[in-house]
Amino acid sequence: MIIGNKTFESGTHIMAIVNVTPDSFFENSRVKGNTEVLSRVEKALNEGAEIIDIGAQSTRPGHIPVTAAEEIKRLSTYIQDIKKAFPGTLISVDTYYSEVAKYSLDNGADLINDIWGLQYDNGEMANIIGKYNAACCLMHNALKDEYTALLDDICAFLKKSLDIAKKAKIDPNKICLDGGIGFAKNIDENWELLKNYDKLNTLGYPLLLGTSRKRMFGGDVQDRLKPTLESTYLACQMDVRFVRVHDVKENKEVIDNFNANNNRN
Image (cartoon, rainbow, N blue to C red; front, side):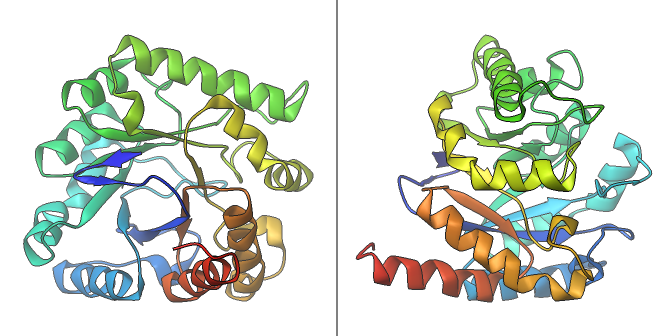
């Protein structure tokens, strides 16, 4: 997959979560103000992150949606500030609003991480991504937790997203897919998806896995690092291209150990 000026051909790589929100489910992921944002980004890069994913709206279960204008206000000048402080850094913006995507791409973002897989706004998001020749991550989502066959239904949704991307002339080399763990799925469904995540490889695109500290692991959010790391190891086994995580250092150690034990560079 091509993001910005970098090609991710193999292995598992880290996308670090930076939330410029007041209500994201993991409090330690929230940052505010230029100094704090840049400090968090610097730490993530030093620990091995290759992409910084900025979110300006919480999408945790039960969240209260905010407007595109509010997301843009929260993003402020952070994209430009990060690019200036850390030249060459790849920035992903987590949004399903086309207006926010345009603002972000105008200010130097490299990837749009869309939790509705281009299906929120009748193709406008796809058109903007195509126009800017940007990269994108297309995630499965649903209004209700209702499935005939979970994996088949997820694949059908993502195939529709890929059809939309094709019509908008989005470069297929700049697309990755996300099964949407934690979105419109109960705990059993989340585990079914995780254990069978490699079945999404049949769609022919690199995959992103987002399980970091999610409630499918049970207990308090502060105690979910160990199962998160176990899921990252599974991602390596399944040749998932990206893991989106809060704890960069620990997840990078898992990836490095996997690569060393399996003679991968």
